[in-house]
Length: 125
Image 1: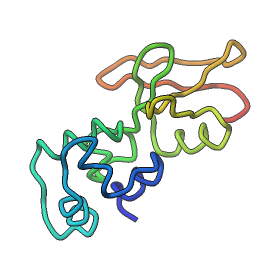
Image 2 (image 1 turned 90 degrees about the vertical axis):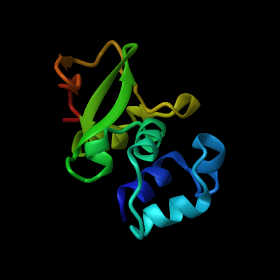
Image 3 (image 1 turned 120 degrees about the horizontal axis):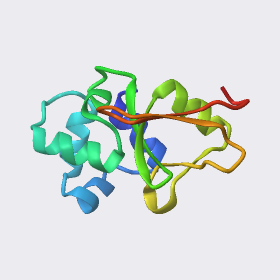
């Protein structure tokens, strides 16, 4: 499964949804999913913004780059950490915004940098 299919499944998007959401036709999405055609940077940015990932993550150049909102900011997670948090019930999607739910009992570390990172240091890790 490629990243577009994986992320579409995560958000529940169908091929037809992309036209309504970001103006990319079903045919363009099919071609991207099947890797039959390249796509320009504008389409890449539209998809990454909608699916809340970095371009490197979307293009499978990195497993780091899943964007989550927490504490009123955006943070980047690795696929491994994201899957751990999701399995622990810490990920939700209010208004299709991928959110890491942190409560007062969570011990967290914020790592500032080019892409801010967040790490929970409790039992789920």
